[in-house]
Length: 576
Image 1: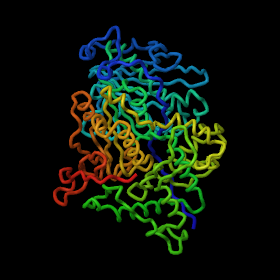
Image 2 (image 1 turned 45 degrees about the vertical axis):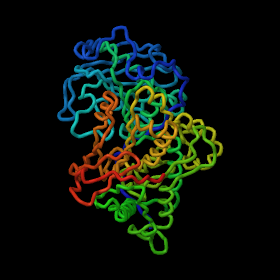
Image 3 (image 1 turned 90 degrees about the vertical axis):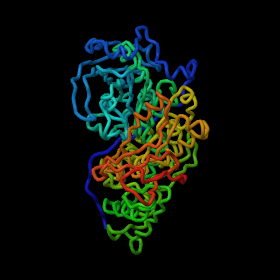
Image 4 (image 1 turned 90 degrees about the horizontal axis):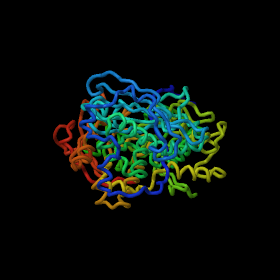
């Protein structure tokens, strides 16, 4: 029987890209590089600068010379500057600040501008925070916003006195694409726009914002941070690798670091779910999720709606098989549906060579805790097709845009006609894109030598960017840098029950990663026994220990099950 489900709205953001590292800049003392901001003729101490900022309106029309930008542009200018009055309340409160909008112009006149925004608080703390974007970008992230998995009991960066900034990655999304979806890939037909999106715009935006900050405060930031999730998480890793002295601290959440490889998996997903009878409707998606939870919730000695040991969950979807294997009811799964779910939950490998060196993608935890029913982030409401339905899963829509604008550069091309395992004539183009979009070198030695610190965060119920991929990235860092050296500057925290951008998560993670990063970067105090809070309406502020990889939280068997002190971090390495 044919099964359909109602369309649902709302989604998150995912991204692609970063380029191979450029030729190294002239070296300075690493210890000095991370702590000393760029020279400026009118530099004064941040404390003094906070009391004597320039008039906001005088920034309007400020030139942004190409000479202050570390990658080629034709310069730019501030297009608007106005004072914003104090607003909001509680943790979202902001004091008065100067909002500055600017544009950087491309070398190729056919390429779009990079637009960016800077928020300059009247009471500046002497630091800066760059926010990463999401999806295919095309809009400027909210400079009054928070870091991923941000705390519910602390002010956001602008409210703490940070000068904050962000850019649109070098193109502007079409009006019919909302900022919450970031699914307009049409800019992919222009080479400079692709390079900007893949990473160049990060450096250009950072340098332009730095010029504006120095002009306004007559001082450079004493400490510089960047935070982002999904594609913004990839961007955060990209700057640490490509420009290791630009930032002192990096927060990277659920990063799509191997973006081209992830795109290929999305294409594999599109082909799997477009086959007759393979797609699961919402009732069947929910059936699968409830089956997984019944089987694995409790493996940590507590039934609490969270699978703490994702790697230890081995749910067999064949226990939900319909009699005879046919598609007979919403209360069971057909053989075709079971095959699709098993394939999406398993690694994908390809036999051809990509320039980035990636050979596969590890699959998703759909059989170990990820919920396919999350609106658009999971499987979506309708099977993939051509044209791609707007209520299909986010990943297959992402593939649709990549095929039509990045790979074939033919807006009419059928996304299902490109096989990610056997791309044929498109193999060379896909390989070239992988060199741009996969941030896979994991060589953070220069970042570490400069005193940089990295916090990696990923939920084990992520349905859009697999946490298994982040585990692989972290292991590469350990192999490249060495396990002991890695521990001196980087941490990976896997958060059970947390999903992509905390949308309807079984554990809506809230953690003050910014304060932890400040303590580590500015005072040399590494994170110790961190605690994460469930900020979801059903979580009632329960807490869990935030366990450093490869450990996971296990209930002691006694004590308050809503308190982190009742758990230990159990060391059982997760599978890849």
